[in-house]
Image (cartoon, rainbow, N blue to C red; front, side):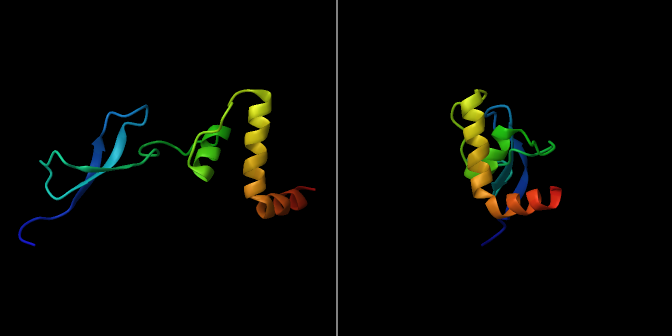
Length: 93
């Protein structure tokens, strides 16, 4: 094992709008760092329809920002969360 230790720090990977990641390496000077993307580093959690869909399904919705596409996206989220959604509807009635 020797003197190597695991170092975790916030790094910049230069990918997309969310350029922050958690950088994990055995040496802080290593170029072969493994990046664990973290889309929420330093940001508040977004509740936009697209971001909720991404968190639930791990992919971006198709045909976003169209009437039909947004309705389809919302229905897919509701279908996945049906028991919670019905309970919430009952409480709001």
